[in-house]
Amino acid sequence: FSLIIRGGGEFAGGAVVNTMLSSATGALGSLFFRTAVWPGREWDISAALNGVLAGLVAITSGCPVVETWAALVIGLLAGIFYILASRFTIRVMRVDDPLDATPVHMFCGMLGLIMTGFFAKPEFVRRLNSDFQPEDEKIYSGVFYGGSGQLLASQIVEILVILCWVTLFIAPYFSFLNKMGWFRVSPDQEESGLDDSHHGGSAYPEIYAEDNIAKKNSNNFYELEKAIPEEKEGKKSTVDPDEEDHTLNKA
Image 1 (cartoon, rainbow, N blue to C red):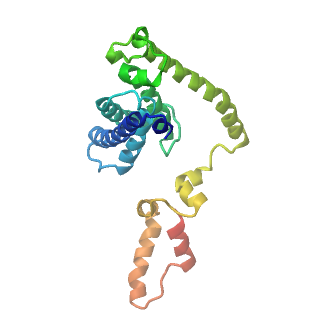
Image 2 (image 1 turned 30 degrees about the vertical axis):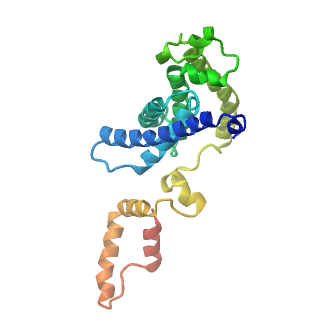
Image 3 (image 1 turned 180 degrees about the vertical axis):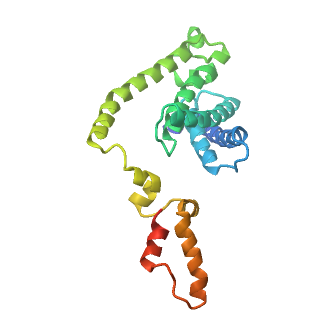
């Protein structure tokens, strides 16, 4: 809005278009890449939605200084990179991140900063800096536009500074939570899910119901099936009602 007031409406419009295009290719990239890497799986809508976020995060750094085609490329790379970062977070870093906030915001954010160092167009950078001089073009240009690499180096330094800053302030806080026993919930609550144990209901009731059926003890489940025809014939069920409720809600 401030750009429009200062006469930069076209400039702001370009940033908006780049942001939307990057989010679109981010969704496509994550959706198709996940299916290609893990064949046999159904189309994963959650991967596509997080791909949208990955594209939005990755383009944030360079949305005002990259061309439209570059925004498409950045979003596509972010969607693919998100899937890889998600696996890395869980299997290598061993971080329990069910929302994939780490791969989306941290890893794709770092990717976006680096991509700006490659795709920044000097003409667009010049519009942001009134002190831009002709001799500064190589300094502020992306590598793909003949830049000297100084902009890319600056972006990498920014990543390192942010990582150090966050680690300095957040690590002690998480350590305190862990020491107090507040960092994780109990194993039983992890198994049932925080939606059910803390928020009064499952976020995915159909999937949750299928999982419960699969986890039921086979003997108890057989007894319940056996009791059904007896009740239809007017016979008393061999399963105590309280025991039946407990069996159904056990998982």
